[in-house]
Image 1 (cartoon, rainbow, N blue to C red):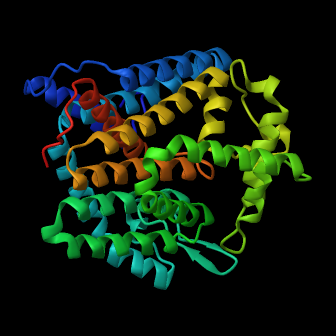
Image 2: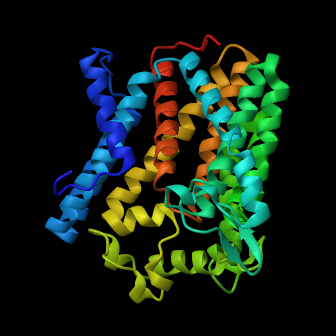
Length: 373
């Protein structure tokens, strides 16, 4: 439009906000801890990035804000209770099923039917097809599917009438994860199943975290290389780049003084291939410095905390399991963040889970422990 280049999410977000105000279909949102942290994170990231890049950075950040903020407001405005949330999660689950014939075709022929909309050809690594469907990269596709597995488990818990249909979608999502042929998503799927299986231990989360920290610290003390190089050994598919991701963490730690204040324009001088930042946590630091990274981590930690708390205090057992499944999805995203940075459609799913955490915080603040499903 003129000199402006708009992405689909920007068009959808801006049009959606305008539609809400034109139709008077909006509500007053009382900002809670999650909402306020999101605002601080966006502001801090925008200021530091603009200071680092100047006018060019300010324009780029303005574009990202017009993508993130309207979509966040739209979803936050729409999802007012758990019934609406469940409805939307079921819609996403059912829509994901429509991808099945396209992914099967892509997996069998190496032809991505979304080339009609400008998608690139199916990636091939060492003879293995890496399906991506409508996503920009196989890892994003696999991360989406892996993150949706705990969600489908949650839906099966509260929607027993159609549970066999949802179990079929669950199996489909597992197939999508495998079809992406990427170690990160498959590892995220494994961790997702692990998170779901420790439902009965969720009250002992602090003890578990302390034990994990002690184990990692002990390994760090006795290993010849830093503990994050364990990632280099986790290559579930031939040609995986676990070493690259471990080296990225290592170089980020070594060059802390270069990015901590405002971020850094490129990590390629560190020896990172093509300057590819395949870690969401590190990307926050690279683009916004230490403050932006810490705010992002705080958002994730509190999101997990509030959903974890709500999964304990909810009155009905099936509802507690439902909430824990959603909490597990955020934990799966955290695992995915170690191997990929989210963009495109995945931005919407990240926003969705932030809104879910904000909804849990709203209910906790009001001492409402019946989600009404």
